[in-house]
Image 1 (tube, rainbow, N blue to C red):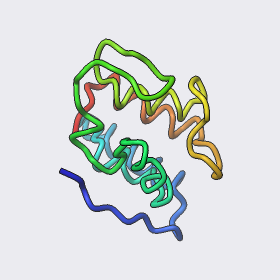
Image 2 (image 1 turned 180 degrees about the vertical axis):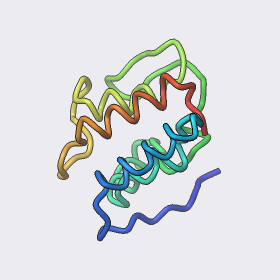
Image 3 (image 1 turned 135 degrees about the horizontal axis):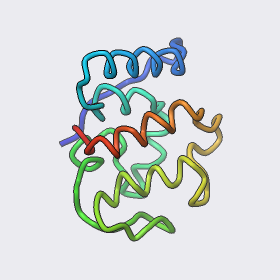
Length: 122
């Protein structure tokens, strides 16, 4: 199942990330992919990755616990899709995501990592 999401380019995503992080931390709720990570991607990010069978807008795909990897990333013992995407976002795997756009800030990367270490909550 794919979650429909259309980012609003007029919003400052670093600001939104900070608000989402504060919200998640203040409630002690696990960081959610759908509400905290998915909004960080642009429509171009999502559409660019689909031909490579990487479904950034699909919560089930991104939270799948299966081992594996994508492209040069991995293989990982668990959550191969999410761990692979993170590897491309950090530049540990090449080419670094997102292509043709500004690289993710450390704050965004930290939030993604916190989501993973927090249990890959949908």
